[in-house]
Amino acid sequence: MVRVGLAMLQGARHEHVQALTAASKQLGVDIEIVELRTGSQVDDRLDCLVLPGGESTAMRKASQSESLLSALFSWMEEHPQRPVLGTCAGAIILATPGGSNRSLLRAEISRNAWGRQRDSFEAGVALSFETPAGGDFSPNKAPRDQFNHQPLPVGEMAQSEHEELFPGVFIRAPRFVQSSVGCTPVAFLGDEIVGVLDGQRLALTFHPELTNDYRFHRWLIHQSFLTN
Ligand code: GLN
Image (tube, rainbow, N blue to C red; front, side, top):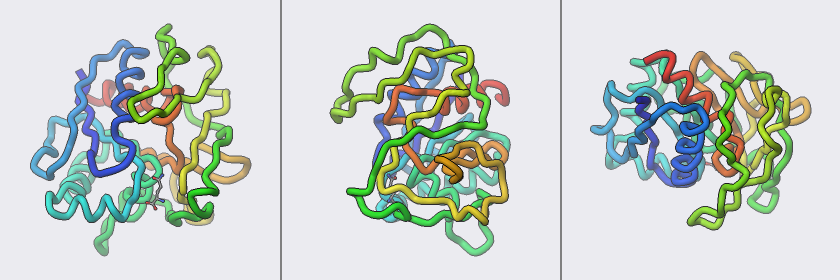
C-alpha cells in the first residue's frame, strides 16, 4: 500500500485523484490518497506527494492559516528520497519555496511566461524519462469528469510507450529559465525543457492530470513502492 499525499491547496486536485487511481490500477499497486489540508496532516507515513496546478499565489495564501506549505517543505527536506510530483503551479512552488536558504529544485522558473490565459495550448511533449509500463486497464474509455474535463485521447499503450509524445496541456504555464536548469531535464517541447527531475522531485510546467496518459502518475507510485 502506497500512501500518496495530495496537497488540497487550490486548483486541479480532483483530476489528480482520478489520475492516481487509474495509474494505481494500471500498475496493480494499491494506494491510499491522503488529502492534505493542514500542516498537522503531513506526517512520516506519507510515501510521496503531489503538488497540483492552479494559482500559486492563491495557494500560498490558502496555505498560510493552516501552515500546509511550510509543513510540506519540511517533509521534503526530511525525506529527500521520497518522490514528489509538482505540476504547473506545483512546479512553481517547488522551484520557489520561499525562505532565504530553501532550495527544493535546482531550476528557476518564470511564472506565466507563455502569456495570458488565451495563450494556453496543447502540444506534444517528448520525454527522456523511463516510466513503468501499465497493464491492460484501458484509459481511453475515461469519461468526462465532474468538472467536464475530457481526458485527451492517446494511443494504445505500447511497449515503446515512453517514446511516444506526451499530450502536454499548458495552462497559463510557467517556463523554466533554461540556463538555470541544474538537474535532469526529462520533458521537452521542441528544444525547450518543460519538465525536470531533481533526485526524486519531478516538476512539470504542464498538466498530466488533465489527460488520460498516466505515465507520470505511474512513475510516482512505482518509485514510492520501490522506496517504502
Ligand atoms: N499561472 C499560474 C501561476 O502562476 C499557474 C497556472 C497553472 O498551474 N495552470 O501560479
